[in-house]
Structure formats: C-alpha cells, structure tokens
Length: 397
Image 1 (cartoon, rainbow, N blue to C red):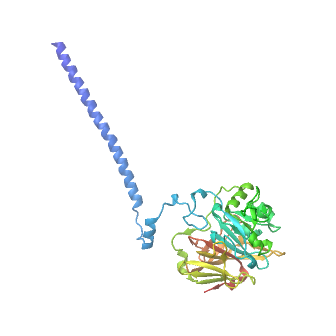
Image 2: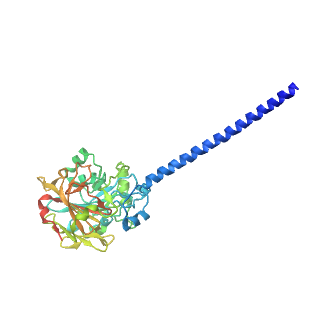
Image 3: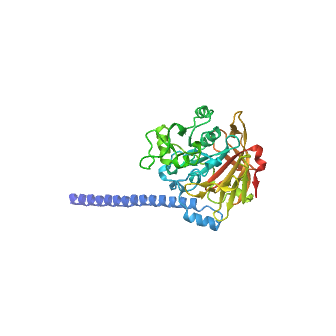
C-alpha cells in the first residue's frame, strides 16, 4: 500500500512539473511575439512621424515634379549643368576643358553647342577666346578649332578640376600650371599634320591625339585648324598619365525649379556684352519658346556649330566683371581672386550679382546684392569674364 501511494505521489508531481513547463513555454513564446510586434509598431510609428511632419501646400508644378521625381541617390547628376542626364559610367570622373578659337576668321567652330559650359574671356588685343567644358569626355564630339593656353583659361579650368586641353601656350603658362598643380595637355606636342590618309579615314599613330582638319586647311590660316574628339582626349589623358578619376565639383548650386533669386529680377530679352572694340556685341537674345538665350556676335551673326548647324543656346548667362589689366606684353592679367560684380540672366530675367573665386582651384560663387547665395537654373551656362572698366557698356533690354 505504501509503495502504491508513493507511486501516486510521484505521478502527481510529474504531472505538476509538466504543467508548469508547458505554461512557461506558452509565456515565453508570447513575450517573444509581443517584443517583435512592439518593435514593428515602434518602427512604423517612427516612420510615420518622420514622413508626416507638417509641410506647406505644394503648388501644382511642385506636385507634378514630385510625382515624377527619382531619388537623388539613384540618378547621376551632371555637375556642370545640374541635369539628371549623366552616364552612370562617368560618375567619379573628371571633366575636360578645351581652349576654342573665337577669332572671326576661325568661325564657325565645331562641337561648341555640345559643351556643358562655355566661358568667353579676353586674351590679347581685345580678342576673345572660349573655354568649352564637357562633364563626360567620352561624349565630347569633334571640337575645334583648338587654340593656345592663357593663364585665365588655366584658372577657369582648375575651378572645376577639369583637365585642360589646348594647342600651344603662352610663355607664362608652363610655370603657372606647375606652381598651381593644374593638369593640362598641349596638343601641339601630340599632333598629326593633317587628317588625310589613304583610305579617307582619320588615322592617328600611337602618341598622336590631335590633327589639323584638311578641309579647314584649304580655307583658313594654319592656326585656325586644330581639332580632336572625345575618344582621342581620353587617349591623350591616358598617354600623358593624367588621372581621370576624381570629383568634378558642381559648377553652381543648381535648382530644378525656377531660381528664386530671379523673382526680384528685371526683364531681359536681350543682353549685349561689350568686351572690347574688337568684340563689342556679344549678344544673348531670349527665345520665349525654348526659354533659352541664343548667342550672336560680330555684327549680329549667329554663333554657330559647324557640325550640327545649330546656334549656341543656353539656359543661363553669367557675366563677371573682373580686375583685368595689361600684363606689359600683348597679353593680359586677370586677377580672378579679387572677385567682383556682374549679372545673372535666365528665363527672361536678370539680377545684379557679386562673385568670388578664392584661388585657381576654387569654384566661382555668385550671390545676390544682399549676400545670399544665388541658386542657378538647371541647364547649360555661358559665362562672360569681362574687364570691370567696361562694365557700363553692357546693354540690357
């Protein structure tokens, strides 16, 4: 009897233990699920809190833009225009700048309409020259005619970390680029005499990246005939052991909506920039249909691209009045680090600006007269660098 009673006790104890273990298992499982639910709820609540902060009622334009917007992190932005059209393969690559002839005897040029940015500046004797920038060297078309380097072009090129491409150079340039660590390629050293060949194709030997256009040679002076293209720029960069890898800083602070600074601007249907007696009518005429400024010069002639047959047209026109003085020879000195005043025109409006460029490698920063940073409209820009002593000769209508 005693053994039987002990058996009953042991059985009861065993049943009690199993019951406790079962209850504990149910409790532990419930805690784990509750914690997961709590974590999910917390994340959801946090996300909701972050995305439902009070905002102003968007305009119809902003609403449409938001509906079609692509996350910035997935869209390669062209740093020279602010446009969402950069080839992903070009991310982390440097831009190139090319010295382009603007003498009346060397027009029309080639490839200039494809440039992301065009600078125009005085060289000597009142004559102007262009610096055409391409964010993606691989996409650059045949460009020319290419002319020699000046220090002002070196300064402007370095501001966007561009690899400066030219054909010949002023005697003061080599020391300047060496002292300021500016990457440049002199096409005069790596040039073929002409593009004529047996099969009619352009054939460039190893170490040759530039050539003189045979058609231009029959019509122009020799100095107005040098050309190259994107593929050969890349060959030259590799051949000269210059690194293409590196950041191209943003030319300006861009805005995808109309620049707020222009709201206080005055109408500008035509802007005539006076450089000198040799180039006194560098003209930008606003096209209300395309919303672009079309460029003319030298007696009102449209500034054309020979390859495309199109007139140069840009979204933004920036005019910078700079401290430019004679050097003592035929060339000039441009003290861009002094900064100055100027104008910004876009979308038929114009405002007065101040600008700075601290050193050769620093960007150009433009502010309004109150000192506020000017956001520039997305698109191509044409930048005039003009002697401040002739600023009053600029005409706005």
